[in-house]
Picture (tube, rainbow over the protein chains, first blue to last red):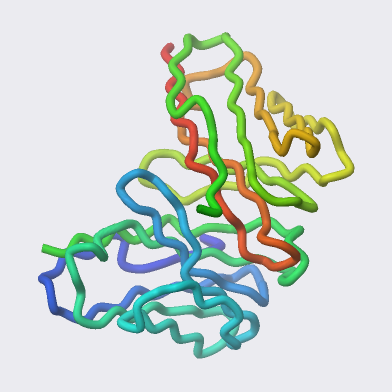
Length: 115
Length: 111
């Protein structure tokens, strides 16, 4: 009964392809996030959604499009993949948004390799 | 850059020794969090310390916070091989739920 689960764990694809990563949380949290971790382990927020509404959209290319069909799911679709998109993408959730006081629960990550 | 800095970048110790990691951040905060990341896994929350707290304990973990110096430290006492992981501090950006993570410290504990 994994709290935050994301699939796939590994994704290897060619440049120019379109791919999606799925994320689901069973914690009943209202807020979900996508973070990107590069090869140097720097972790940076990409998006956050609160109850299906986009709250944070960092300076991310519009090739990245998050979609939240309901508050338990936040998927990430990436168009026209580029070499620089290779990274580990983490989904996370938290309970009380907007106060900066709540801890994040992370998924186990999706390692994306663009060849 | 918004990112906080952690030092050391890497730390190697023997089992039983204590490990201390430091974090410096750039803006005023209302709390600071520490996370652990095992190799190939997601981050796991360890401890949260609020801006009006100076020290907090959780098991073998001790966290201090000095808001005047914008710095925090994480002490792991009596380390174990299972403590081998990367450790990150994180601070909220203003009153938002956007967490800014530090650069991380890679801890290796040898049996």
